[in-house]
Amino acid sequence: MKIALGADHAGFELKEKIRQHLLDKGILVDDRGTNSSHSVDYPDYARVVAEEVAARKADWGILVCGSGIGMSIAANKVPGIRAAHVTTEVEARLSREHNDANVLTLGARLLEESRALKIVDRWLSSSFAGGHHERRVEKIAALEKEDSRVARC
Image (cartoon, rainbow, N blue to C red; front, side):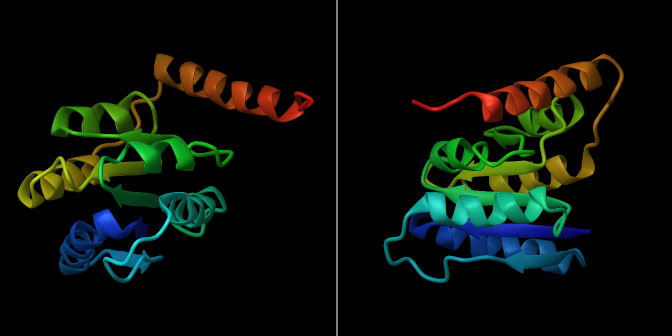
């Protein structure tokens, strides 16, 4: 399993904890930055991680910013990405089981380290349930394709 990992300056410290946690579990990590707490723009890191997941160069992606919201919005602009902003273990499980989320976003300013690591573990240990959920995920993909055909004014 390979995880693409990224963060902005607000998420840097938590990203580092997650990176080490994943490595300790024997999971391959492609750390796409940032590599310090100096101010950067979260869409840049969301894009790099999301594109890596969309191109299947990584199995999943994990993104961290201050709230997790900006990373989620930005990552979801990349075709094929279903990024879920998650704050609980239940949401982590459901985002995988029901929505086949392929990118997890977390808020470093909102989650304690121990809770964030539990969310990561739950997310990675959950899998897509398929069934009637598959039809819904396919409809999301269809919306994405329709949007790409719409002429922009």
